Image (cartoon, rainbow, N blue to C red; front, side, top):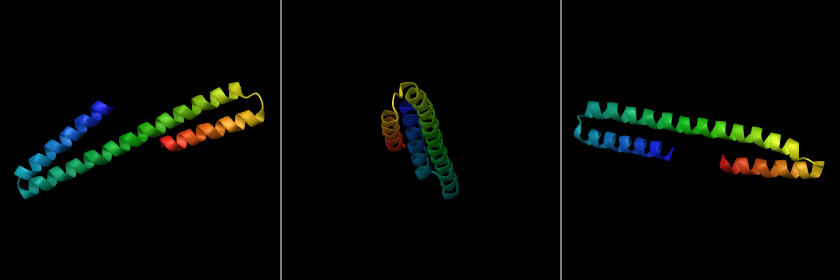
Length: 89
């Protein structure tokens, strides 16, 4: 993902450089495309984070179900993992 982030950053910087040498109408068009790229990138990161958290929750639930010996241990473990997911998101 880091290499894709670098590619996006390079593309945005090239677009900004192109804006400086373009006429006003073309620069506005480039700015809109850059903004659309940034919006799509943020959406992609949000989708990836959601899917990762969802997958993590499923694996955690299976693990906790298999490892629960008494209810106190189970509840404590669930709270710990829930806090971990909250800090990740």
